Amino acid sequence: MRAASLAKSPRLQRTLRVLQQGGEFTTRQLVRQARICAVNSVIAELRANGCNITCRQECLKGRGRRFFYQLISSPEGWDARTETD
Image (cartoon, rainbow, N blue to C red; front, side, top):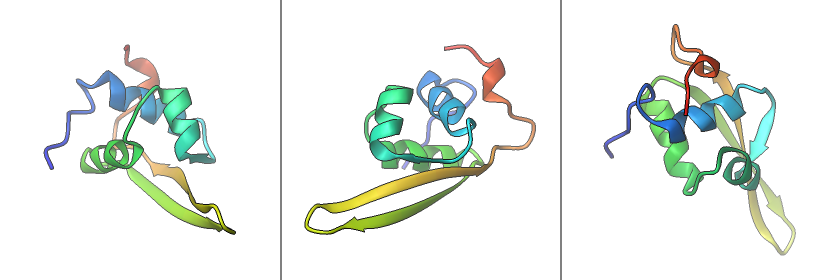
């Protein structure tokens, strides 16, 4: 996979800003709050740019799985809140 540059990608910047709010976010929450699709791909791109993001899954009885993402650390020197869309 070829990851987009965090410095040049509004999509990655929006997602990082949401994750920087703290706590865990479900796939659905990231889709809505960051206005993205393919959350797993966006998370992989953020990781390729130096973000440390955890993912855990919760099995829902008879309804599949729910994934939760949490930012542990951003790339050194990066503060997405100063970037613009």
